Image (cartoon, rainbow, N blue to C red):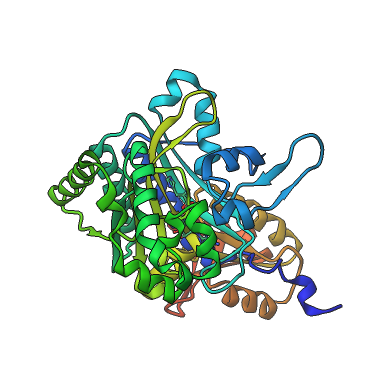
Length: 413
Ligand code: HAM
């Protein structure tokens, strides 16, 4: 059998100890930060109707066009979620009035059929939030400030927040017309994709990775210059509020974001440790119409895998959050073995990590296991000790050992 028989699918990973302890720390602190801001956790299904994503993210986005895991088991075409906003809005749209002013967060796996590379996976994980309510620069600023508090709570340093605006919905046409007119003289120099994008979705030309396209984009006015005064004032208010709150952001008018639901504020957080895929998080204000009425909201998602790469570059790793090594019980004889199972249950009930061999083995073999477990204390009991009501306690750090009364052993454990 080939050894890759046991590997997960390409672009997907098994997450195991000790890295899993970093995930758990991140999840616990995310829950604490979001809860303090009044957010409730939401768990939506991995599968949704494909139309939920098509209608939310936009038909011409790369995610919907090329990256969906979709299939049609019966009447409806279904898709595995590529991101969390669409399913959340499907859920909130179903909650009527209440869904229009909700604050929810999610921690969940996402699926995109992308070409895997460092920091780009086919199954990845996001921690994200969505807050619905009328557009308000203060809500956008609070969301960004909360995201920054979470990165601080994780111990992440060196990240950069870039911010821009997609303008209000009525800006879409003047922006598209303005950009198209500005790009027209350069049409033949754009890449084949962008020559198509110019009619289909001209904003996608702005964030094209092709160097030639980037040179042209640098020469034309930015999308913001075609927007209304109101849209620019909205962005200024977000930035000023963040400044007052002590959150540093850089304006990048070329920041477009890859999803079509955005209006007004958009932002991305990058980290130098990430290389080519340097965005560790993205967010923005949006309007999503799944029912009759579009629901306005604001939110973000942080990619766990990328955040972990950045945290590791900051010297933070899973080992630091692994459970503290506890106690190993050594049993000499059948009676001691069963008595130790009882003792182990008592210690575990006190929250102590406790291990033991569940079959009769030599003292040497049991001590080898105790060493491998990393336990800081070993409790040894044989028939003699059980009869006397004592146990031998070995301190594995200092190498010392003493015989103690059994009650004392439990008290000191
Ligand atoms: P996004 O920018 O597509 O936004 O994804 C957010 C983050 O998910 C990225 O910054 C990255 O860290 C991570 N990510 C995305 N794709 C991959 C991948 N293939 N492999 C590893 N990590 C990845 C959204 O998903 C929006 N729903 C964010 C949002 C919420 N906007 C408003 N509310």
